[in-house]
Image (tube, rainbow, N blue to C red; front, side, top):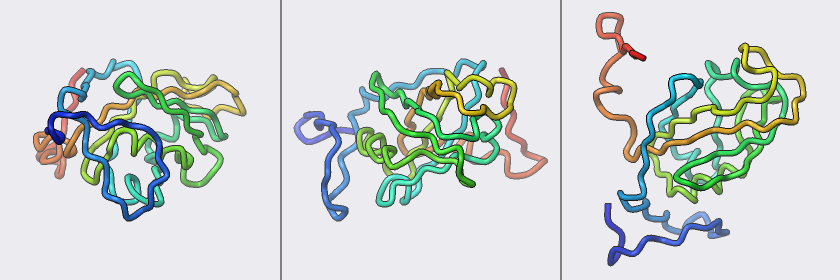
Length: 170
């Protein structure tokens, strides 16, 4: 992907009106894909409109809740050499990140159809065994990878039936 005249857009939080055009995606040389460690739990979300536009809501999949505390906690999202601080809302029925998720989405020019892989690299105390932490003040740290245009077709086209399972090999 190329930006106008090869100039990379300046990325900073903004208070633009909702009807303003979205930021252009970062140049392809900004994309960084790091293999998952294999030792840390992760979840993947393909971005929908409500995650990358108003109201900027990101719910964490239910299958991942066992790795997270049932309390509010500070969380850091690390992506492409930058960090964003958000609050994890673990005390709600739908576990999610607070409205600071908007800064991450805008800062990475996320668009509908992009996929994000969230790897939990530093959980709060008490969550390592799959239980829920009490009220630990330790922060959650996620390494986030942005995959432009969603997940590869080799992944999304498989696993729809028991005859064609998606097999993950370590």
